Length: 164
Image 1 (cartoon, rainbow, N blue to C red):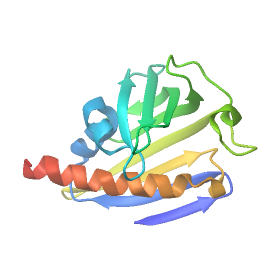
Image 2 (image 1 turned 120 degrees about the horizontal axis):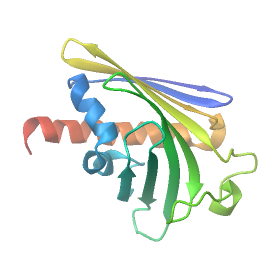
Image 3 (image 1 turned 45 degrees about the vertical axis):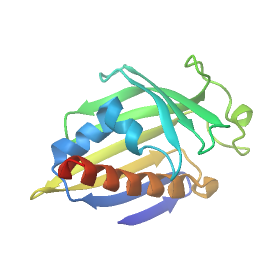
Image 4 (image 1 turned 135 degrees about the vertical axis):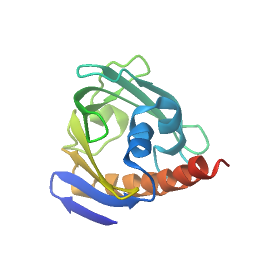
């Protein structure tokens, strides 16, 4: 795994011991997405995904004690099945209305809309994933959150593959 934080993007490359079709499913199936998204200890009580270009996303991430809920919304901008996924992401309320980042407690200068791109490459039964979260300031802590989420993703993949 390698992490590269530029001034305006977080880029994380990671290889998973799973076929590309399964990694794609982890990103696009709400039931799987809820199991791994967010930093360690966080849960995802809501994951609505209308998987088509122009389709809407609405995600709720809750803190470990449930006292804080962070909603994001966006739309799919690119879908190349099992190869490439792109979507926008903006802070939102529970109805999917975009709210200002500062209203959500984000630092000054945090953009109202960011873009996530996921590239998947089959490596003989394993999958190389490169995730780019563009528009996120490198010092925002998002890289650490994504890294923790991908650790949870690896654990969920093991559970799925081993039938636990």
